[in-house]
Structure formats: C-alpha cells, structure tokens
Image 1 (cartoon, rainbow, N blue to C red):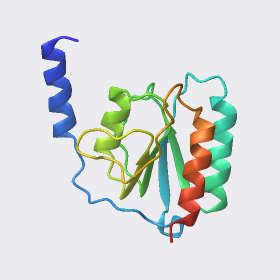
Image 2 (cartoon, helix red, strand yellow):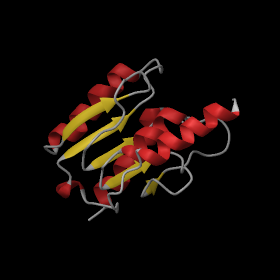
Image 3 (spheres, rainbow, N blue to C red):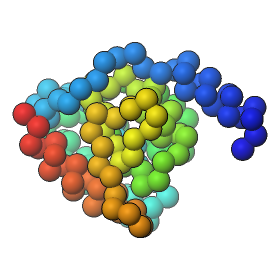
Image 4 (tube, one colour):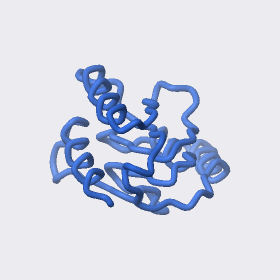
Length: 142
C-alpha cells in the first residue's frame, strides 16, 4: 500500500472517530444495534435471519451492514463486528460508530471494542460460531 493511501486512511479514521464514551451494557438497556458482517460468506443470508430473530425478540432495532455499504458511519446503542478477518472498512465503521457498547472479534489500535472474542490460532471461526460465544456473554451481562 502506498504511503499517501496510508496517510489518507489515517486521517479519515482520526477525523471521523467517535467521542462517545463506551462501556459494557446489559441487553435490557440496548434499544438499537448495528451488526457488521462479512457478506461474502456463503451462509450470510440465513445468519442475518438469526440475528434479526435474536435482537427482535428483545425489542432491539437492528441494522446489518457490510463492507459493500456506502455509509459505514452509524448511530446506535450497540455495535457488533462479526467479520472473521480485520479490514479497513470494519475499522472505520467501529471507530466512527456512536454506539455506547462495542463488541468485535479482534482489537484494533486505541482499543475500540469493549468486548472482544478472539478465535483460536489457525483458521478463523465462521460468523455464526463467533456469535454463539458473544450471545452467551451478552445474555450474562447484568
């Protein structure tokens, strides 16, 4: 990657970084959620239905975004990144989100996420398996 491209990315990440303080929150306090998924995975569409069911049962408004969306800057109470591999679009979406609770699968510099579930060394887990672990943790946060 060229030096000028790195400078532009660094500038955009800094210019659009959210200033909202974040912390762990129970599901009962969350009213809206944004989930960043890898839309290229083969089972993504059935998984989106599972996400809608999980958040819908709790009365949480859900928005699902991916690297193909134009507007990655979002406003919600909860931001969840399930992308198996880190990418610049996820980094931008997470750092610019005004969510008060952020969870993901890998920590970026400046510690963007409040809750991180890391895959075991080797091949990354599918999104649905990572969500199983995160779901258990979210249910237990009081």
